[in-house]
Length: 384
Image (cartoon, rainbow, N blue to C red; front, side, top):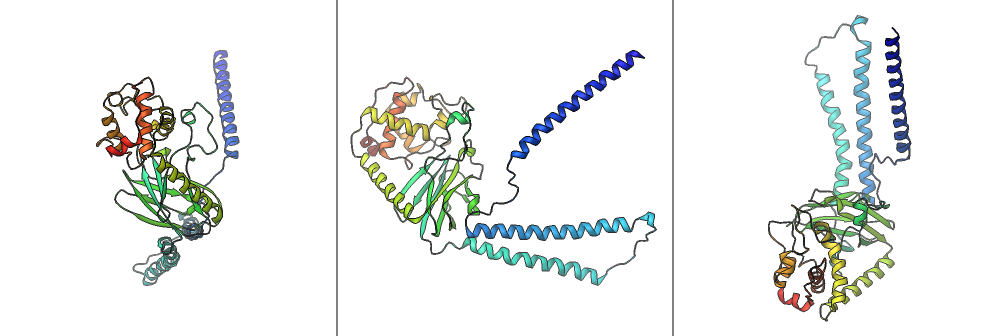
């Protein structure tokens, strides 16, 4: 008997401990949950169209709530007040014309009431006519290219989150995986037409605050537009599974007042004129190595790693590889034209002659390769 009591007491002790552990876990969860931001609804956004989409969403939501309350309320009322123990006798009727007319007309009127505002919003979403500015958005694995068609300038936008944060070696920043080196800068109070396409696989350009997202499909151009009403930085990401680094392909839109936008645009034009001039001069090895390292870390390190050792079985290493230490013409050709059937993209359309010369020089002299080769932009221009 004592043994049984001891066993029972031990069981109670274990149960108490388990209950205490569960209570502590729930307390931690509740504490964390109470500090979390529950974004359960759509964002209202910063454009008129995004607010119309939000209002349409809420209208349909409340229509569905009313229908649900009415239908389930009628069901529960009928089941409770007409149950068998109250002596309820089921009515016998067949082919009631009145009921059939009602359950046809009422849903039809509800659908019409939903279709009218939905059609109005859809038409507004597709009306990209008479823009003040046109921007082409091209998706690449895994970055975006922005081209201001009427201004003759373009640039690439890539992830700016340090790889140390991604690897867990540093504390993650406020905008982890949602920060870029070059955001898309747009003017406030202007209608901007956005043309989306892709150079390799299907991507999707999505900024929730603008109220829409658009697929970027190779060989096709999809048209959208936005009219941002207030300055700010608005973040999004690629919304289509596009390969290994799909999660590292953010979108950042920087909306500025018209005067600030014009100053920024003038500065960008000056920078690109300077880049064009860089293709025509001789570079020192030090300059090429510095520029090449920057380009490599931006364009190449995601696959080949910052140490040049690649990912075994997925992406080849460049440290001591035959392509990097072999004929320089083959190395340049691979960067310019890529390699069919692999993830190696053609960087010729993405990089200037000076940039290609820099990254080739860097790869041939980094990580102990030490070929001593110094490639000039003129050589790249010859091999294009």
